[in-house]
Image 1: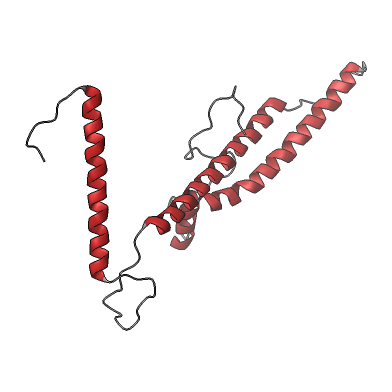
Image 2: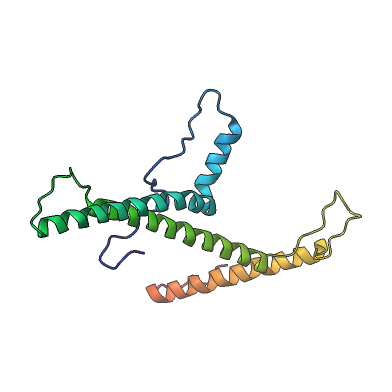
Length: 183
């Protein structure tokens, strides 16, 4: 949504123009409503759904202001000076519209990243270990505890190998010689 000449979009924590949900305690307000408002602040899909009506309203306002400006400029060009009142500035409403578009783009990117991490997590994480509370309900995709331990040990070993390789590479780049007899 942003062009190369524009400034980078605001961080996801930036408040949206328009009405905001307040998380402050209001006498008589149910805690469930506050929890729902807090969940919407962190859920990019809910935030997206909340921003769509604001975007629609902003687009309608933008088109109305553009039409008013076009009529006023046409009247001025035709020599009919009209004083229909102060016409709102088009650039301000366009900026508000683009700000909402940028926030929607950030919400979609965040939702995509969450989905990607969820897929990667299920793909690369080990299967579940059966719980001790329900030994009769064996899950079909679960691992016995001994296999689970060996998988975790191999993951730890792999992480240590990667750490050592990165450490060795950084030492070569900086010209440091690793100490002999070290771990």
